[in-house]
Image 1 (cartoon, rainbow, N blue to C red):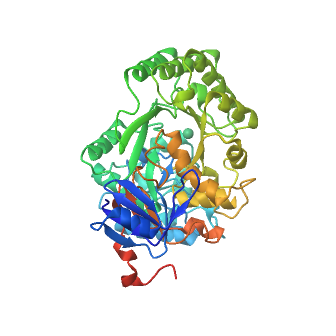
Image 2 (image 1 turned 60 degrees about the vertical axis):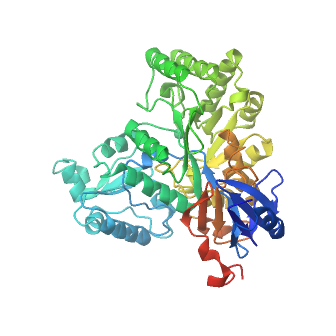
Image 3 (image 1 turned 60 degrees about the horizontal axis):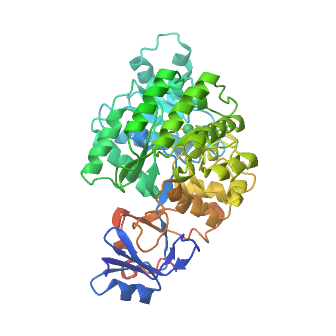
Length: 522
Ligand SMILES: [Zn+2]
């Protein structure tokens, strides 16, 4: 018996055989059955609400394996993700500013870059931001690259007359500089409301689960807000978090390492529930060892390596999964060295340790990963600016048979729309139209990597990532068919209904009824 039957559709189950069914039944928060419409109606029983999908495609809820969601709840933002022209971006800022509550600043904290636009790619000017912001301070940041501000922001920040930014409106980039600027922004008046707004934004895009990797400068109060929402059953997004050292980008020293190792030993992973849980150590746990970016690989001292080893051995001993921020080939080499060393004390294979980002990963690394049972979390950051960073070899990774998945690294370093990530993986192009991936993936492989693949990285494969009886009913009803739309349209796919745990958190199932709107498949 079931509470709801979704029939006459195309259910892309993303099960082990990538089978497609016409119908699925949901009972409470779980999938009860899949099959033909007749089979599912029979299994669902007479009391189930019957939803005619009208031929629409349903896929599992999308999982972002690397999304700084918690940090995104710290400010009210007007987002420019995916804007395709400079004019459209300026219009978005103007509209967004007009809708802000009194006292809020006009903030855009990454997730876009001028290089994603067609045609005119000039940065905004101070005069333009003065014009759109309506007297509010404006701080418009492109990824972690640079920001353009307005006069009201320069005044609020106490920038002296004659400073260069007074003329250009441009302030320098980099994570540390931008975090410092962010510390001067007004906090949201209502943190819970801001968190709800971010969840609603993610749901609208088709995200039902995020793996949040912590990060530099994320406040404990931000986790408290989410824990309180979780305790009241008010999350609409499943949020998995990490235990790490987000204090600074140059964290080092034996005392710091011993402190984190002690915290790791005292805590236990997976002590939450299906909505809110802490499931790994990472992505930063000893920055001096593994802080790593394209063009600036880590250069740890022997002491840094030994200190990281203390942390990793503690994690292995206490049964913690670990994910390590690692980008370059040499940085990845250091991480695999350290994982192998930790595994000599406590085998890490059952813990599915991970390398996250991993753009520089090579066939030799993959061999080491195979021996250790290490998994790989990739991100689509390069979709915004071709080659920034150069993408990981998706095809090599896919063909290796290792466990891996797709994410973004949003909301600052990257955009967060999972359909943009899928489009990037399938077309190999950046938003600005440049060729960026050597060998793209087929649609099936890309979708697996954004659903079931990520579920396995998170030890959630028996709960999430496919539409199968017994799994949680996290489902997207799409406005068009992911498997057959022209490849270039994948980035425009929009869910018309999003279910998390069987509950509609975005859109509506009723609007699908053919008697109201005709058969949308025709
Ligand atoms: Zn990272």
